[in-house]
Image 1 (cartoon, one colour):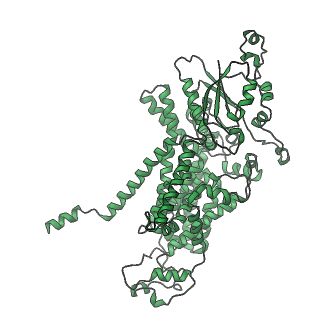
Image 2 (cartoon, rainbow, N blue to C red):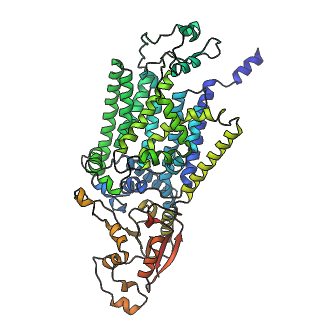
Image 3 (tube, rainbow, N blue to C red):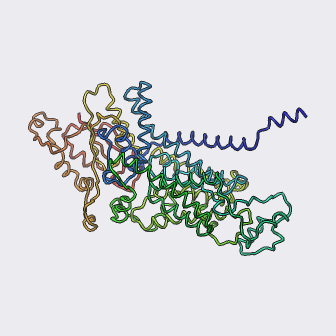
Length: 626
């Protein structure tokens, strides 16, 4: 007896095991995403910096700290909530660096890395709550929730984007968190339903459910045991689910996260409007509607007040960024200034780029979730099937809505990726059975090949593609840190606008830099906008002419001292900087223009093997004034 008691005391409790596993998953994901954040060395989209880190730099270190503030912030199109978070990170990193007595170089490295580490936490939470959402949908007995975790970890898009400081990345994390906390069973009025006891010989719930999905109505006596037969029938009313304190907390948490996501990206409203409409129309209940309305008003108003306060502190006046965002981008269609795509873009390019080899399983998952069926609430799979249906329609609605807007980018549908992974999990597990090591050698080979392709793509885009525009910023920062330097470093970027990060990577105030701009034509009508050329467009249409018209007299940088003394002075023109940075595509022109001057190539870094914008192809080149 004593031995048995000792063994019983030494045996871990199931609940304790579950909590330990959850913590291990979370810690493992944090470590993984920190490594992810520190190994991504490439550039993707300017908004990673100009919609988050640049305004955050200005908030943290003052408006005179030379963070690049784009027109969107001057026109109050963006909520300051997102950069405010990174401003707090910058202030904390700066305080820690000063407390540790770091020199200027080490402090700069800390400030460059700090936002990456903060975003790594966000990325890990996205993976974690995608896993939690899968557990809520499928339960924990099968392998589907582990499949979702594997899909997220091995996703090239996740590796490439999740640790970047896009507002879309935080939006995706908030969205999947909100979905994982959403009380699905309460809305489906299925709280009393439990999984069938599969050990009972008479249980044929799974078989009958399959029959129902095929349109066959089974005989009542074959559904299960006497205990199961006593459950409510399809025609009898279900017990109304109770809004317990636990359910209320989950609903409030979900709604607050959803409201924050909508503040960050107003287009997120398509997701939550779809969820609310589907749940309430399919399962009308006065109590449910009243509770949802009350919780939504409390959560929404709280987040709105918080957002208004943050925006007031940043803009110095009352601002409604969501309204301005819709007005400029939808009503005035200014977003099309930055490019338009075909109406089928998200279905023919966006989803394939987002999912890569998971695309076939996501398509099958969509079909399984949307196909007609005759589920009844007394079956164990009812909540799962209905939840997958809601998730599928929730994913389709934004895709259709965004397809109507001319300007399209894959990252705009990033918040749908965890949903797509959840839908793909079931067919994935069915195909690679037993998961994760299928018994079929052919399918095992397919699995290994798919993982290899994903890892290769993730490594290429994270380590190689467009790394030169990041490396050059490190080079310039290190040049400014040289002990021999006694004056400010001057830099000119002759590149398409926003081709490089800015103060978030230059850091030092003694680096005096300028770049070509691409301000949109805010005051022109649609017809006039068709013929509008921004500064970068004008430069690339005639580089030599632009340099003659906008730069100081070229004689100032000639070898001849006599010629330099004869140069004209015009303070309205830009001075020739110490460093000129441009892409390899421009090299022949720049070599011809700068012939006989004191400019010489001093740095060259690989950037791309290919690029859809031919102006950005090839290496990044720096020419230094000697």
